[in-house]
Amino acid sequence: MLTEDGKHLYVSYDEYNGLVEKLAIKVHQSGWQFDTILCLARGGMRPGDVLSRVFDKPLAIMSTSSYRAGAGTVHGQLDIAHYITTPKGRIAGRVLLVDDLADSGQTLQAVIDQLKNNYQPITELRSAVLWTKAVSSFTPDYCVEFLPTNPWIHQPFENYDNMKPEQLIKKWSV
Image 1 (cartoon, rainbow, N blue to C red):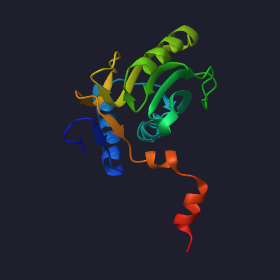
Image 2: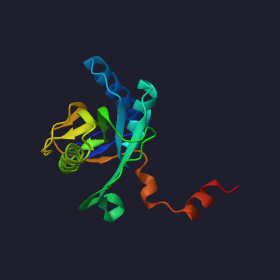
Image 3: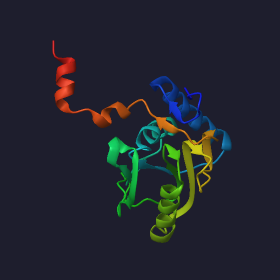
């Protein structure tokens, strides 16, 4: 649900899962065939997992991080892993790069540049996200929702950013 001022977008689990399914439909309807899904951890892991299951393709993972402070609300230095975890040796062929959103666009562009420069076995690379903000300098190949007001997205699982094991114990103790 987008707030009236357009500054915050609150997403439920049902809405989130629906967006992931709509992303799968967009990719499928494009007719593009790919060999591997590469998700960016952490934001791309949930959609990447679902797309890997729907398309029956191996899931590779590359870790990136730029939001750290303030329970993940403050943008910091972009870190990109030097290695990709994949079940099939080196990543190669046609790769679908998956993340949750194109916010500033810096992460997706930096990852694509790194992949093009350091992973020559990749023959074609396309990107897929749930949301693209208007301020993004990067335009993904596949996107479910364009956000012209650039809201802060409150994803349903972010409550875990501030949760500790003791809180879970208290919640689930009888």
